[in-house]
Image 1 (cartoon, rainbow, N blue to C red):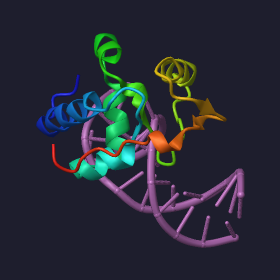
Image 2 (image 1 turned 120 degrees about the vertical axis):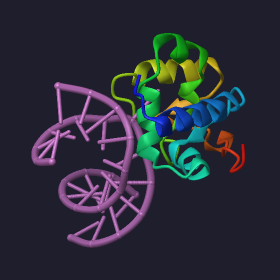
Image 3 (image 1 turned 30 degrees about the vertical axis):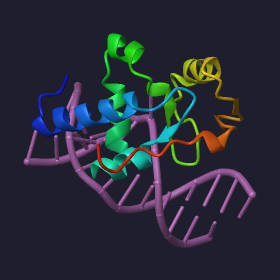
Length: 108
DNA sequence: CTGTTGACGCTCT
DNA sequence: TAGAGCGCCAACA
């Protein structure tokens, strides 16, 4: 786990937002990044640094790339499986029910 | 300090 | 309408 103060702050914010995403809803890296004034890449990187415990507690599968696309080469199958379990229908590597998109609030 | 990497997004072909 | 390329910047080796 990185020691940068900024990293810890951003991570806390990201975790808070992701945790606030209702089941069956989807948010994007761009939306979260825009809300926290950080780059989408950083949001993605934060999720890669999550421990197994955090990954199980945090609904990271509800966070996808812009356009509802799933960009997780390693965890693609697992993410799709989790989403389908929550009732989110996936199709061709992206969220089919795009209307379930949940934009993270700018202020949280 | 220097070079590579990446769960991304935008722009140009 | 798709695909390739570039920029972005923290983490890491």
